Image (tube, rainbow, N blue to C red; front, side):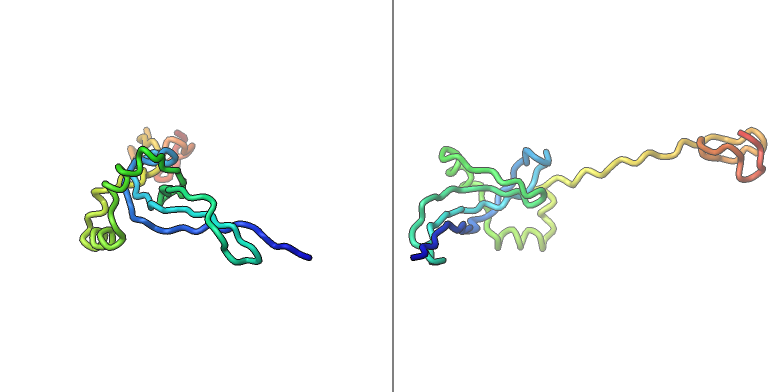
Length: 134
């Protein structure tokens, strides 16, 4: 006789909260989810054996478990999907999150040619205007 069993994870979206992500180090919107694990027998979920609340960063996908002591505080600060959608439509979501830091690019250092006085990059060996060696 073959006996097939296993487990399956179920996620219920509870709402959203803003907090500083420990992974990407910026203020982000986190999805608050209830994770439930159920035992399956012949691919049919039978009973739940584990349950926990997690928050997932919407930017870097870092998942963190919410401790029991923090659940009331998370529930107090949580916003619904409908409220988040209305904030996005009104352009108010930028107040909740920080902009992604842009990479700094090095600007080429400029200098002047001694022969013609035109502005050239420091990396150049010859002036593109007059041909003098720098």
